[in-house]
Image (cartoon, rainbow, N blue to C red; front, side, top):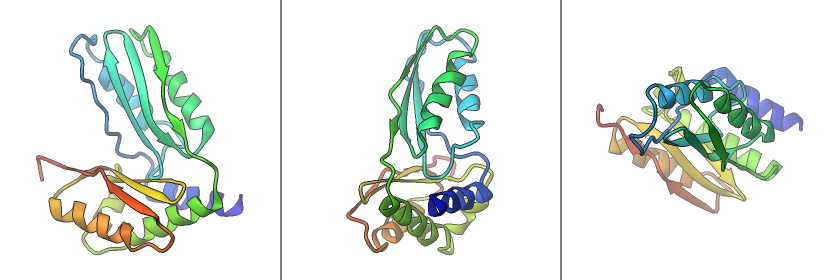
Length: 178
């Protein structure tokens, strides 16, 4: 428990809001619902670099996706979204990752490996860091947005070099803006 708290505090000190890869695939959504959902999810107090949230808006229905490390974050996400004007239904498909000291250790080591790398360290200094580290049973998934293909590849290489990691899935997207 002490290590988990230190891990969350370390992530929290580097960022107060994280990248939220959000999808709004249906244009039937009333105006402002996607923007309001994104804003409300970014403002969740326990949302950090070890969580990944996304959503889809279909008319007045919002479906939440992703993985979180704290069970309360799943319910908090559903609660804030259901109180948005114009949202009539929320489907909460967010997965709560297993509580595991082994995974917590990998999270912290992967965080250090990626964000201490010259070139990638700039992502830690942003108000909205671009690289999220999702760890489930020793398997790492990188989510978010980076400026270049080189940054994406470098983050994947750094994550692959972390001792104890079974596999790395690099789902980082390269920004069109560079």
